[in-house]
Image (tube, rainbow, N blue to C red; front, side, top):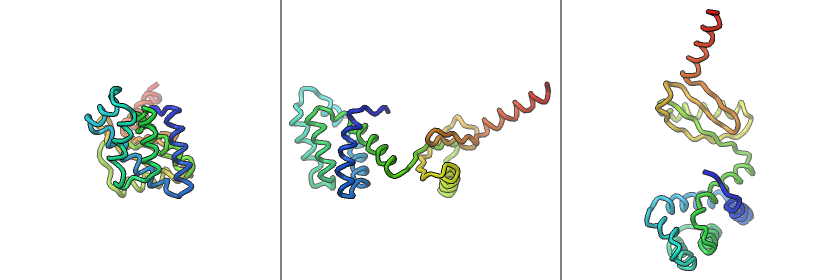
Length: 182
């Protein structure tokens, strides 16, 4: 998903406020949960996307839905401001931008690991530790199953790709055999 500059600005403001209070990690969890909730229900999505419903009504709906439900004032105020400005549809972008800004501040690099079969918790931890050691950075990986892979894993972390898939090994073997045959 592409993050707009507007979403980045809201995320930057929220990060500045929550960083001062030391609640930035909690704010990320809350914002991500709200973004998921707003996007997962078609009726809720339709409500916030409906141009005939006033921004005040949308803001009031958010206040009613989340006030006293464990959502911090900073996150709630951000959601209300987005509703008042008719920008409720970018909550997921704000959450993504907030995550990115927080990662930069904390020196975290995120990546995705694809594998043919689900990896055990030990294998995931080992892979995370190895990649972290190679890149000399704190790494957070998400793991996905990819039925297109014959076996092995492919990790995309930052600008790096670590490919230990059977497909790649077979291609290298094929190239080597072709070189020797010529």
